[in-house]
Length: 365
Image (cartoon, rainbow, N blue to C red; front, side, top):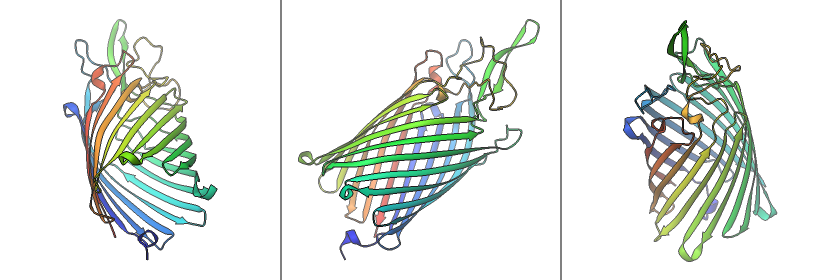
């Protein structure tokens, strides 16, 4: 039986370490994957993840007068997650069902998905239609009671093969999240009058809206260059939500064959976003009277730097080495991550830079 027509089983492992400069946040993650072909048309995939996070991150307070360093809060946690995907290839339609669970000490997330891929035009055109839902329980110790949030996403997409060397992709996603959308560990500061003429810099929990609607458009192109044994993969992603955040992401990857068993993939990704409408460094100078709990009702406010106007840049190199053809492949990746604020108000020390290291292997039989 030709290899392309017989069932194939796969096991894979990957380790990734995210290390922010200055000893801030470090995340070490271990991934494992098992794929089992249940005949020629049916496949089962199970993925497991264990990661540990430790370090310090900005809590939302501004830098003190005379200092350019924002206050940091220490944190540590461990996450365990797993997912399973079951897919079956019908005559023209591939149907995939997924279920996933993620557990942290203060956060439990469960989700499921259904996706279909339908071939047209002698398999030169593929239609993607998918739906996913997540249900999350937040039990942070700062909360007076557990909170919940749910999210629903629908995706519609097309992939078109132009010729044997060029393919184009366009996906559009509509998503809505409801419930507790604040970060229980982020606070915001305001100089508050305690007694007539006496002001103190008090802190309050941030308060984001209890609903977020988004649109995402993704376009990509892959072009192979046979004369140099390489391929270029480029993509552009547009994002907009009703919190006022609009973002653009441009990514380029080059896949270069070096001999018959080594592939090098340099890559770069640039990302830019606007700030959420309710982002403030502090509430000083505003008429907002903050509350003692994140109600999800107006007025809204957050000092989370991730909601500010910012740019990020990723650049890295991946090497993929085939040790045994069609059997054993290993890979290693290094990436440098840079983040910069653009509003001229948020302290530069809030934004992290990081090194990302990834190694992995895949065995199939």
